[in-house]
Length: 466
Picture 1 (cartoon, one colour):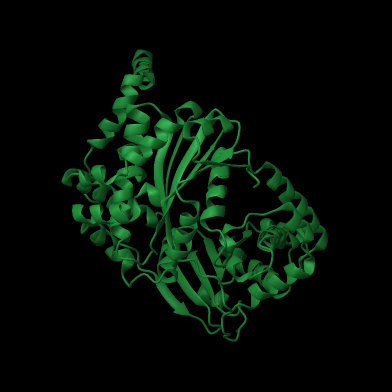
Picture 2 (cartoon, rainbow, N blue to C red; picture 1 turned 135 degrees about the vertical axis):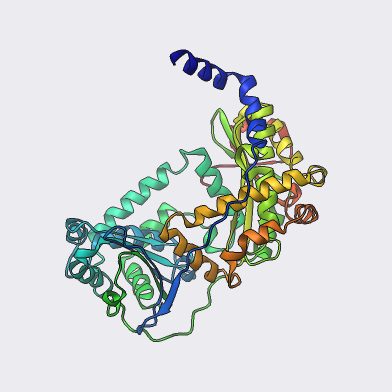
């Protein structure tokens, strides 16, 4: 047995074997997986809260997410640090009845958990508790919403923690690259602003209290609840709020992002960091989630970089040439826009070779040469992976809410597999010409200053905190 393990280990470490791994995985065929999308119950209670629920009495546990549609995009001209500072201070401050540590300690005593997240679109309160403790736990939670206790001392401590986070945020190369891409891609919007210590220091508790009040009075609210719940227990949890005219918020569109990409042009943005492994990324603009090209983009992205060892990026950059430990691509689709990023991590001395190859692998020449076999394999993989959207009830509810938030058509989840299966080679060529062009992307590299020598005259050197 030991000899077998040694042989297997030797083969796995052998460069020749590793280069063949992509080919081996590529040839595995899977038939489309058949499954039914769970039936989600949706109703609106007397307080005007829309409730999405999936009953599962296997365990006596209740999981709930309260979504209040007021987030960072509602800050307007106010400092964006307000949202993060409030997020990290709020749950620790508790309520007037259960101040500071007494709030979380009381919940933990009864086996319950609670957290707050202030996102771009909305604020999310995540809750879990044992069903038998519901009569005790819900009043504790309700006090948090009715009489919050934002503590000035905790706010001050949180400022210190966030300051330290800013001091350390450039340690991770990947995180640094993603932040610098976001700052330039979303320039001129709240989504493109990163925290600064100066802005953090200037925030007064009155500003946090004002934003907190706005969140708690926002009329659009949703409750996502799964497990062994009883909806009647939640009937009096929410106050009845008057509908108000929503304030003007920023709207990010593909045109917004494309304008920012055009400003950068073909110039390479080199973020100086003395590392041996450089991070290379090309970031482009996609249409909104509810766009006819969505399905074809998903399939082409899987083939080029999103399919792991099945993708051209992993096969050609990593396996066949050994130029990168990691290479691939990922998409992000929102209600009003989308983005795509191709990336690779490589030795700094290989940066130019890798970037050239990254560009080559999305040229029309390669996309036009894709075969029906590759198309079918990608479609089957995506269809089979889709089942993981429903691996737990919370994720299933989140998928349905995302569908509605992004104004996807009725039956989107049920019809997703059919729409993917309709994608043709002609569709791939079309979306490739529209969205997979390197000259319409921002190129960002995190690496040493010496990389300038590879692209003399076409590099803009920037510092991590520029």
